[in-house]
Length: 85
Image (cartoon, rainbow, N blue to C red):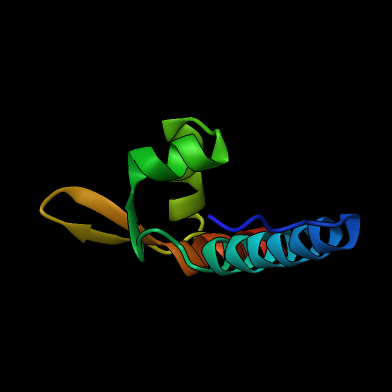
């Protein structure tokens, strides 16, 4: 088995490439929501709010929802818009 010498420059180059790869991976994961539609419990947990607060956001029209079979669903992008305002 041949021996290969690794220099400090090789390690530095590897470190820089690895950090760049990790940054790109982090950006791509952060930009994509895990789901397009979230249930009320998921929204409450994500925003750390109570059921009443979520209901007030829905009733006042600040957060759009869709009701399917008695369950309210919220779009991830609508939640993002709420934070941008």
